[in-house]
Image (cartoon, rainbow, N blue to C red; front, side, top):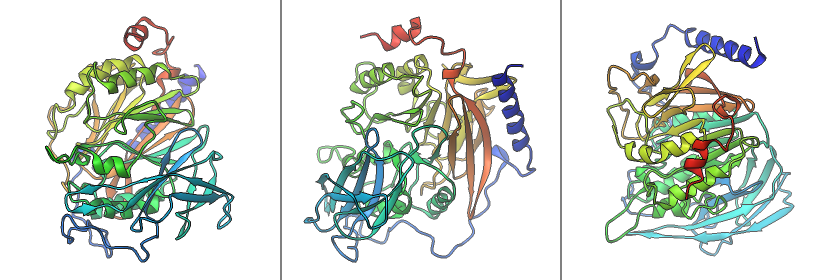
Length: 462
């Protein structure tokens, strides 16, 4: 038996053993118990007047809501907010605490939304940085010292994944569980703060996630709760674009709502479910160009995130992703995308049927060994609650589904194998409930030649 086939068989047997090791109910049979009360649970600051500005920090010039994101190869963007508009957009940094050997200047912005005025929002890109290295940094020339760790340049790579996060006690529990795991980066497919026009909730969200988001890069895309559009008064995504600037320019995009980046041996594409995506759109043209330039020898893994799921057997949000899927699924299939992660539905669901030596994925509504693995993970802890109703009988492509809060971990071991786990949020303890090994299409018979007729027809057409 060939070595890759033997490895696949061993991983299959391990997955089956782990999934049957516990007699506790999982999936649709699981009934969530009531939450246990805990002291000091962080909740949304709903007591404030909906349009008011948040309370000032101890010093108006101190950095608040610090978070980091990738900004091109070997560079990181540091974002923070100050109440003092005179604070410079500068970051001092180095590999030793309080011994900064480098400094970078950046830009700042602010916005007004009805009766709310934001603080000064700073964006500073630092680098070039060494891979897999801890850096200490200070924002604005004063205040607390922060530290970050850059991602590795090669496998293994560990990604934390969470969607539809919000600001509830469940959110706090989910974030605490993520903090317990070893990860290099966090991916979030939309619906961050659930501010929904109440701008102070963007501030409280920034404070809530700062302990994690200031130490590892958070790569996000937009969801419907980021729209905040007021017809004739406010265009959409003003708050999101001002606060969560992603590397869209670095990836050749003209919009912060869709972009791509590379980390280790993974090419990640963040798509916009709430901007034009048909074949005549800028996003479609950008996506086609981005896919055509991917080198699967350099980045054998291709992962896509978007907000609205394309394969969804839950009653919630049925059919909302159909038009985007119709436009873009053939494009992603031609490029042999490995995994597509979405949110929006407040529950967990995964495709991919495993049989001996074969992983049946999904494409055009049916199982297909050369399709993508679809994962819906809109269960971070949002205030709207869980989507508990599923359609029955279950579609053939739906392998695991459960209405619980939680988070996912994608550990990409090497160029051919990745390990996906989903961890149910059971108050104090994260419970690993779904566990599966995934093989890259780049190492399969599906990808024989990037100049195949299908690739040329779809990706190379004008």
